[in-house]
Amino acid sequence: MNNQESYKYLYKIDSPADIRSMSKTELVELADEIRKFLIDTISQTGGHFAGSLGVVELTIALHKVFDTPNDLIVWDTGHQAYPHKILTGRRDKMHTIRQLNGLSGFLKRNESEYDTFGAGHAATSLSAALGMATAADLNNEDKKVIAVIGDGAMTNGMAYEAMNNSGMLKKNLIVVLNDNQMSISPNVWQISNYFTNITAHPEYNRFKGAIWELTGKLDQFGDRLRKTAARLESGIKSIITPGMLFESLGFRYFGPFNGHNLPKLIQTFENIKDYTGPILVHINTKKGKGYKPAEDHTTEFHGISPFDKITGKTLPKKPGAPSYTSVFGNTLVKLMEQDKRLVGITAAMPDGTGMSIVQKAFPDRYFDVGIAEEHAVTFAAGLATQNIKPVVAIYSTFMQRAIDQIVHDIALQKLNVILALDRGGLVGADGPTHHGVFDLTYLRMMPHMVVMAPKDENEFRHMLYTADKYEEGPIAIRYPRGSGVGVPLDDELHTIKIGEAEKISEGKDVALLAVGLMVNYAATAVNMLRAENISAELINMRFIKPLDTETLDYIASKFDKVVTLEENSIVGGFGSGVIEYFEDKSYKNEVLRIGLPDEFVEHGTQKELHELLKIDPQGIKERVTSFLAKKVSKTKAG
Ligand SMILES: Cc1ncc(C[n+]2csc(CCOP(=O)(O)OP(=O)(O)O)c2C)c(N)n1
Image 1 (cartoon, rainbow, N blue to C red):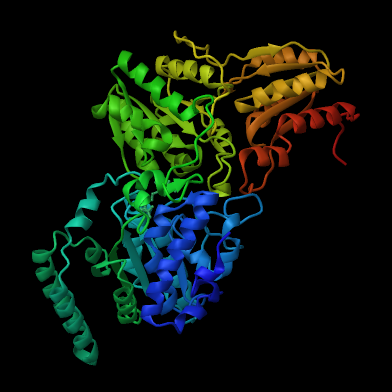
Image 2: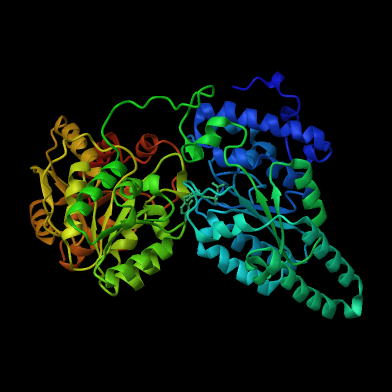
């Protein structure tokens, strides 16, 4: 894919040890080569791009100065770690990134010894790094631990919990704040203004460094003097910087530095690497650095499908059904026109969730709270106590962050909050950190919760309308990543009776009870089964909670064998709900649960994964056929 001859250094680097002997001038050239390589490769594969372009110099500087893998670099979220992968022996596999059996798009402990901590969700790096620094002490090991966190991830509470704890523990921890003033979308938070306002003040930092060194040398008085110096320093710093946030939390602050000045970065890390205690190095970088289209359109290039590297344009999409995300945004705007109580909340994903459509239509009724899913949910709960009807749109995987808030703040108090869980089910290339395969399980366990999953984009719109009209407590809708199935959209919206299933087709040999996307797959499987003279009845259950027990009673009386289908873990999901109900009623039907296995599913396209896991129409047909062929009778264990 890449012409090796056009690279002077890159193909000589198989591990970070190879860059440690290189001069700063050579490393600057290497940085250019890494960018060229990234542009060549990711334009063909697609992937997380702009963030990686922004940390090329940082990655080189860290691997040059620190003794990785003995020293530990913890990248937050992991979407910006492509240069790290390139320098740590994975250059020649980069063309496989995010593809089935290829490199992960994030960090993975089992992919490389340089990947110290797996991630995909934001703001875990500081806690994990503090754990590692503490373990180094406990194990009597000499290790530096460096966490790299973005300004977007710093909108998440976990970062502050970790900083607070770091200040208490006083472990040797270096935090690099990679400040590009962007999350995926522009950063919305108050504290980003704080970063921007921090004045670069070399005299101040030099003065501070000198005092610190001097007081450290005066053994017996050093500690007292240091405390006095620290007080003096606070006084001075509060005059020349707008706040003392990091220092108040117990970090020594250095910066801000130009994160693209490689020699200066190397020098900075050389200077601070042996300092003790928590240190924060603040660098300014440009997301998309070095590739104009990505610099100009950072949001689009955060994660991108294959593109033309000359024009920066992505390959044209085949015209097709609208995405669930856009149907969500457009329908919500329509509902908001009628119902003035409705407001929209996103946790730093306005484009990803379709909330940007709401933002344009109703800027005053739209809230981007930052990467703060827990807060988003409790914020919604607060709004709901005052007769506002919040719609919280969060990807299923990120909603995992807010399980307690849903239980404690919303469900327990029976507040009228609408939860819109986008990317429910397997998401494809982002892999196990991002698959939304537990939501039916974790939502189903909560009292007062209503949980729906639409079979197509039209039903989705009616479910949103139903949620708006529902006044009995929380109601959740989970829907898949990607396009709808291409059905016409009704103009008039109507409510769906809570807990009412829909019969799709009549049959006599076996019942298929499906939710969400699986209704469609099952419908195709029903046709395939018919060709083999198997007559299957298909029910679109629509509600995971409450279950349509009338329909379940009817199914249990009509069929010996029942199949449940869901794109969720089979542990505790929709199928488990059906089995629990049958058990409670002492029904003796045989039940086959088709869903996702009790393991983390790797990355690949959605289609590949569906096939692999036999939840595609063909797989369903095969599994139903062998289920019917099997003579099973329920017996006591043993
Ligand atoms: C808990 C969680 N919520 C949302 C996301 C989606 N997400 C991935 S990267 C990102 C922005 C991160 O911004 P920043 O930390 O500044 O890193 P940058 O991309 O600017 O390098 C977001 C919101 C996530 N990964 N994890």
